[in-house]
Length: 494
Image (tube, rainbow, N blue to C red; front, side, top):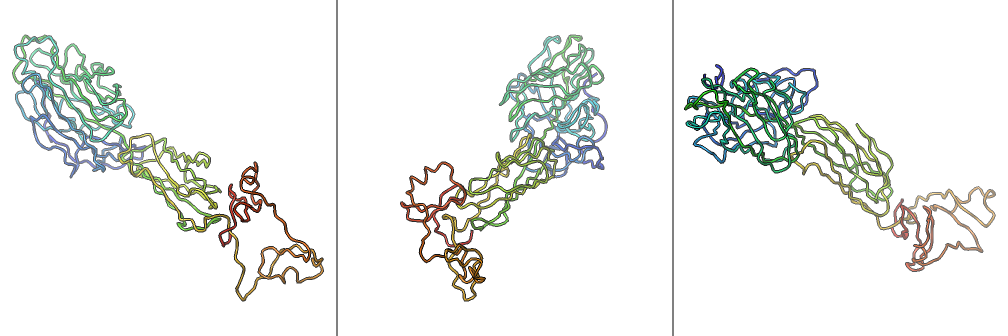
């Protein structure tokens, strides 16, 4: 019997729309086919192909697939062929051409619960009649005349992602075949990767599906196309920033027939699923042209554009020294004004959170506010994880004073100190000294303010907010405000 039987029915993936289940969903990127995805619809044999991931919006409970941007691709290529057409895509026993990218159910006889999609619990998330995989044929007809009780290196399989991925899950289906009395089994052995990785078995159809830190094999002594002597399952590749995986593709026979048969081989499938999350941040302010002393509100909005739910999300946005923090209000999580860290936690696909920071403009300092958001999953577009806002501060050259009122409509003064003994006796004092903030009255005394030079001022160890001194060096009246000494030089109201 030649491996493998292609089941009757549709040979390529079709779109399947299901109703959303109320159960918890964790959207991800998978191998499937939807209109406009550009995925292969043709037949082999070929030695290169490229697959575009599509979004499963309600993984693991359903298969509502849709196109996703920015596009994530996995390119498959066969190199280092040891024999003529030793390894090909889209080919089968008896020199039969088949789809390069079929649904997973038409090769061998795997079950849904043999597989585990990214973001799912063991045995969930893959629908073999809806999910697709690349068909890989180990052409053992090329081994005619060789010992059937040995393993042979056939070629290398190179998988290249168009951007780095973290912890992808490989779905290997139907390892194992049977030709006459000869059991045949292909396998995968990691040769190299751009970053250190190791394998972890998530689920399988039987104990025949063996996974080590660097290999995936069918270890049954009598490999077969289905049942416990076949091997189907899911393997997570543990590693971050993965761009390239190179496998040595070997095939073995169990020696129960004296010859390899022309047109024989093992047909297996490989699919992939991954998680990633495109986080964005938008930073705005309620007043782009405030003046010193104004209250100002910064608004930070974080959104997850998918494809997956993300966790451990935090924002770094510390107020620089040009602002005095008042308070904050977050739609979720907490903001620490001392560290500038807003801890959000989990943010589901399509969800957003908002933080408002209220502050007062100081008379001097840095006013540009920078923000950054990051989470646990890889982000396909880092540029939109950064944002900044920089209000243009008016009258920021020191502490301000108010010009005298020259309007005909005078304003009565409300506070004063007099040495003329009029306080409490003259009901029109200090109102008669119109348009003043503070009235000081004497006909024999003057107001004396401490007079020292700039170096001496700077030696004051604990200046108090509002302390006033005349600076003999700079020839100006100074006040300590917002943590610095400043001359009264800007005519305005603080």
